[in-house]
Image 1 (tube, helix red, strand yellow):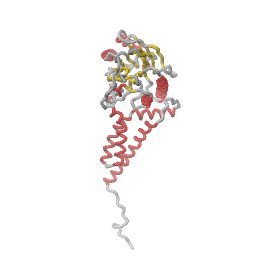
Image 2 (cartoon, rainbow, N blue to C red):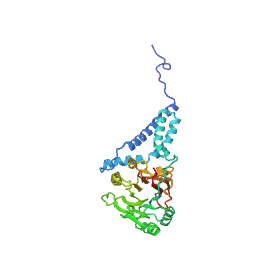
Image 3 (cartoon, rainbow, N blue to C red):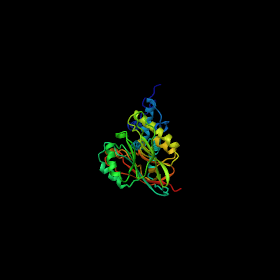
Image 4 (cartoon, rainbow, N blue to C red):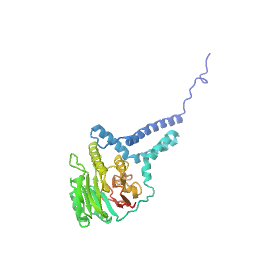
Length: 349
């Protein structure tokens, strides 16, 4: 017995708009899942900071990059979310929203009102300034610094030419200086109004570059340790390896430190990095997180569109003995980093 081909056995085919919607949903999932994997990789990678092999260092580098751009990933997900809403991909919308919230929540939290603990005693004005070795805006940069009335400043990339200009500007007001003059981009200089004691370096790699200069000062009748930092920039796996070994040595020394400590400089590690997580686990807090408002991005500076969403890689990290009542970014004429100025002191507990 025959059947009517028009009334039985037919499988309804989706309309063209429905097929397009399904394809868009598939493409959205294909775009979202790798992004989710990248974020999870950055968060879950086990950091020891002592990796030396090519593969472990490469994996660490990829995790570092994922963490560095967590906030930017969250913003990049917003167009994906809009499309998911338009095609009514409800489950995907929920997942995108959750990942967006995770990625941007840290930056959003920096917008909250701050109520820092007051300073007990005399405030100390400090600054970290990566001047950029090839920068020729000596006078403009140092004139800005002079207006900040700092007591202690840590310079990075202060090569021989910069050191001469620093001496000419700060020589009388900040006569005390220690440095690790490796030349060019590896030079760290600490200038202070008050004497600097017990100067040492922390870890020297195979090239003789330390990246960390330690000294001590007297403030309010109490000895405190100051660490000037310029860790290796992670432009390659080799540089990342060196920078992580520098940081591992720094973290080990800080864990054993008995004095109140401030660590300031160019960490080449953003707020979201495992390096900063490690310092926070040791009881350190960024002065910006105590008294700053907003993300406080310091790099890149003067880089056109790339400076619209800078990241904070220059930090003033304080041990639990300290508080901060004021912190601000400078202009940093000619440099790819913005200087950070802070008023700190022993906390009134």
